Image 1 (tube, rainbow, N blue to C red):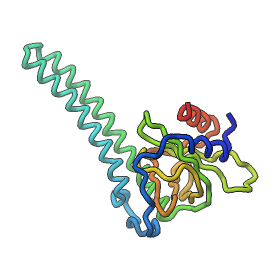
Image 2 (cartoon, helix red, strand yellow):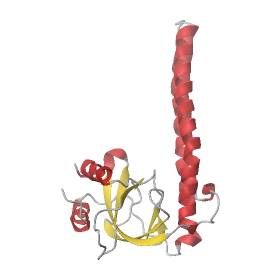
Image 3 (cartoon, rainbow, N blue to C red):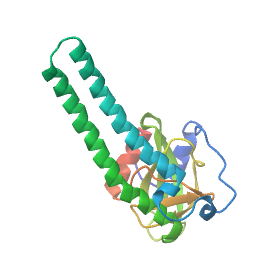
Image 4 (tube, rainbow, N blue to C red):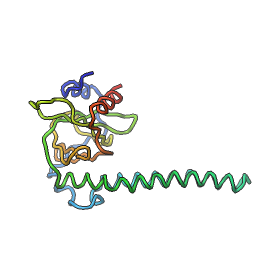
Length: 205
């Protein structure tokens, strides 16, 4: 399958209606948050909270069965083993959360003071993964029309299936701005040709 803007735009238009789509804010994106630390951006705070909550839930999943084992007389050893497993899994998630802070800050910096360039995008839904992908293309007339990147965003709200966008920051830690709205990535963009092709192939099935 050749990855062209026109071809993917047609495929995106055939996908089910985007869930929870909202109109973009009327004010410029600069007025929607105060430049500075990432935690001033509500969407980025929510992303960080999800990582913290995942770690807490995982710890509870381990602690509760451990307590049940003790109550049933299965022995301290079995309960301790289950608890230790949950602790280390939760610790791993917490480490991932701490490592994710620089990434969130890079997104905030990209929108407020990063380089800017005009691109085109196609929004492809991946419902089973509860996310969508913005496949970015250079503007019309560019020497190389191949896609630039695939940026993962949340599944709701979503922009229109395709159209123009402004890319702020440097890939892979860049943020697309569509209709005065910053579409915050869930993680850094996929930028290699093979990775973009694999992503599109998986989403479109």
